[in-house]
Length: 379
Ligand SMILES: Cc1ncc(COP(=O)(O)O)c(C=O)c1O
Image (cartoon, rainbow, N blue to C red):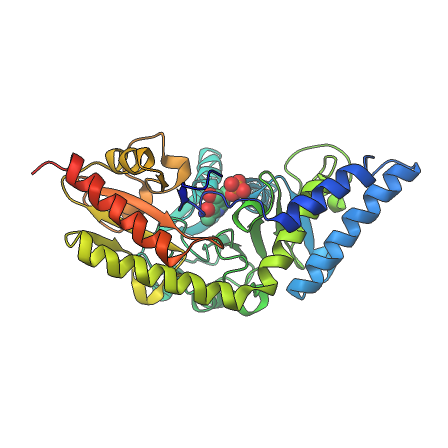
């Protein structure tokens, strides 16, 4: 990235960390074969893949058989949701109304096939009430989906309480957590959360795009497309060995620095908020800040559109997004901002910090935001 660019869109994608880049180049060079092939190059690729799986499993305190590698967070979510429900004739699903489109889109596919879906709204702070979530569960509820950290607001959802109560009401229900935004920022604890399946993605933690994993346990979803018997037959297709190796290298690097990173990002975020109060006093920060990760800040300003904010800041070298990256081209208010009751007339941006973010950059980004508001705001 150019030196004078301030990149504050880590919730959309993080820059590849050097550890991942080196590991991937080594894998491309040393193991060019297909891991299912019998020859020595295939065996070398299979060995690299299994070593990466073992290292990731050890770092996260799982057994390696629980990790199914996929092509990213979206595929992990689709596999969890569709692979759990499609083998059934019918059933009921509950999910929070602020899930990622990967979840909501998979639920729409199920609805078209006759499954019943209940979406539970969050409170105005963007946190789902665990009792309200669990009350939606019925004896025939087959799947409950609750994300860990919301990708637009940074709010942390009460997994343990909500999923625990769901299991009391519907003991055979499979529970699924989208932990794409929390990986390496909060501990990954499926057992404590009461989660049967957990979706992860590499490019949010300094790894490559297009690689992810689904953590399974005693409940594995069924395959949702045909092919070979890779990944225990749950996810057919030639494994992306360099991608997986890069994912694991990035994950280990981030896990090794989790505590320092967390305090650095908290400091950066606090500096941003303080400067925002001084420079743009009318701005509001969305989401319950007592229940939020400092990595993501959602900010709304009156009298200017989200698009003008993002484009204006971009012209001045500060990269942020309007809500989530996947809504960026849709130019309508996201389902998350609607669910917390935010006026669509406010311009909203998402600022998300990462390993290379500094207090100085955060202050400069706010000054750029203030200039953009002065330049384009009406009234
Ligand atoms: C919460 C959440 N879930 C799922 C995804 C999809 O992950 P991927 O981009 O790896 O498909 C994202 C990516 O933005 C996300 O933020």
